[in-house]
Amino acid sequence: MEQLYTVKQGMKILGVQQATMYKLLSEEQIPHVKVRGRKQIKESDLIKYINKNTSIPIKIDVGIQRFKYIPGMKIV
Image 1 (tube, rainbow, N blue to C red):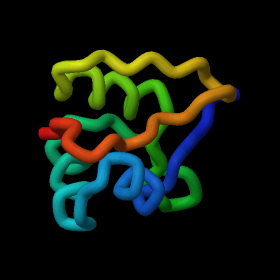
Image 2: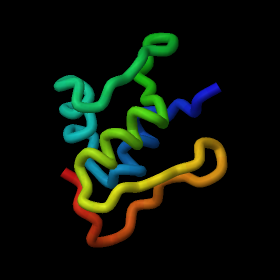
Image 3: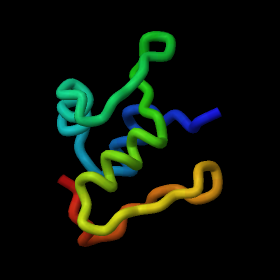
Image 4: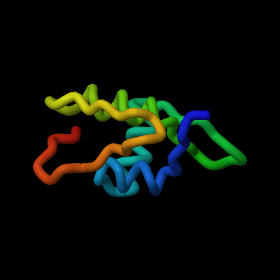
């Protein structure tokens, strides 16, 4: 089963504030699902967003390695 992240975890991974994260979700730049009324983000959707908005593609083997923000990395 694919890893799901909470909004708070997504904020930490992307290094963005809460308002920015909810804006990305509301504009559907990052697809999400609702589980028991709470927004959850699929790992694959988060990776797609990161790869689409960075100049350096990031590869993650699901379940083995997680995305890590590197200072200076451009995330739009």
